[in-house]
Amino acid sequence: MSTLPPIDGRYRIAERIAAGGMGEVFRGHDAVLGRDVAVKILHVSLAGDAGFIDRFRREARAAASLNHPNIVAVYDWGNTDGTYFMVMELVSGHSLRDLLAAQGRLEPAQVADVLHQTLDALSHAHREGIVHRDIKPENILVTDEGVAKVADFGLARAYAESRVTQAPGTVTGTVQYLAPEQIQGEAADPRTDIYSLGIVGFELLTGHVPFVGETSVAVAYKHVRERVPAPGKSERSVPKAMDRLILWATQRDRDRRPTSAAAMSREVARLEKELPKAEPLADLVKVIADTEVPLDHAPTVTIPQAAPTKKGKRSHGRRPGRVRRLFVWLVVLAALGGGGWAAWYYLLSAQVPSVLGLSKDTATARLKDAGLNVEFGLGVYSSEFARDQIAAEDPGAGSRALKWTGVTLQLSLGPRTVTVPSVVDMTYEEATAVIEGQGLSVGGVSNDYSTQFKKGHVMLQDPESGKARSGSPVAITISQGPPPVAMPSVETLAEKQAVTLLEADGLKVETTGKYSTDVARGKVISQGVKAGEPVGKGTTITLVVSLGPRSFPMPDVKGMSESAAAKKLKGLGLKVGVSRVPGSTGSQVVGQQPAEGNTVKAGQTVTIFIGG
Image (tube, rainbow, N blue to C red):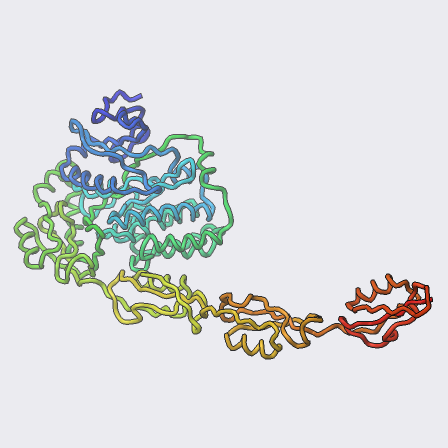
């Protein structure tokens, strides 16, 4: 049991439940709101790093703004007597790492469930301008109810950017889940999280990561140079559709990955319907004997990276000269050793000022005033910064940079424009995939009737063609098929006349015959849809057409009693007249008109003669 005093006067600390590179996590109790919480207390070494503390405040504030059922909630953060802390939701469950340790691997349907929930969490965070940057099995928890929750939003970024005492360009820690752009020092964006989640999906399906090596650098090299293999190559039970999903998410070129977490989530939702059923995630959690809930883990991102702008900008172009210089200094610095390097680094480095949004000349002057060299990389498209403004700086503002390596800036090319694709006559699903695949979004969706396009197909789009800004909406109108018509009344009309009238309204007709004594032969007795009711064009209408009265041979009823003969004849649809033979007292039929064998029709009157 912990003997730590209450944090901030309200959070009573119980036992430690996890520890990692950023600090320790304790089970705690919020005395004000009367609820159990998880309290993360940062290491003293981090608390003494002014750069980290500044980023911690900024990232904690952003993480606390996230409110989503698939994100571990951040309730509070701050410091008391020099102790920095973060108060989070206490999750009852286990991490994906625990599930992998217990199960070896997960079934495809279980993996799809995890991916779907995690993508929903990432989609929410990305809409708020927050990129996680450290998606891995340790940072995805599964509750006792089978709900996946993403932990440590914001902290990974603050921690990674604070490791300025490491030699630039080195790779330490676990790099199995890093996107190529992270390894190359480029700014992270939402597609960076998608790559990492794709690696997590690969591991869940196969039980191992796609790339291994003797050193972290060897693994990092594979991420940059090699394509992630299909999970099905090492685990034959993986469906082809899951292979395609993972390969899509882990493209080395981020422009070829899903355009957003929401777009990938829609594909996973479609895929889930095709996968064989599997044991629910909640049941997997229950079989794990260890009830410890790991909420913090050793950091895996320790590569100095550019601090991304709110939405992240991709850094294009390589800087071979800069890399060579860094390699030379890396060899020198490695020989100097830990403490000496740290002091020497601060002596020969400067803090990078923010120049985002400035002109080329102004940004150059500001960086030179800070004692830093300036290099310009390729321009980048940006919807946030106007053309020729600084859209990205590497290293990012607030970081420290060696004075001779300087800072690389990228000018905005303005918003990216893309060609508007034609999606007319596609289904809604097909049109959505094409529009989003082009880097646009589906705008308003309306419905209308059309005689030209099938029901469910796109009949109109706006804009129809040309160029548009990346992310711009394309409005589509979905055909509801031909417009409905009011059903006409065709009862008592001749069959041919009724069919002509209905077909003129775009309706199809089927007919069936029925004997009738009330409606003349060849005329309509009834119609399948009542007159006046709306009916869509192309609908088949059934008409019942009269065959006239049924005809048959007159039966022989002579010798039968009057009542029996009348019953038989009426049962055949005949009307019966009775005539008694004068002077006779009998009750049997002695004659009939027409005689037996003659043709009669239903509804016809026949006469029986009674005598004997």
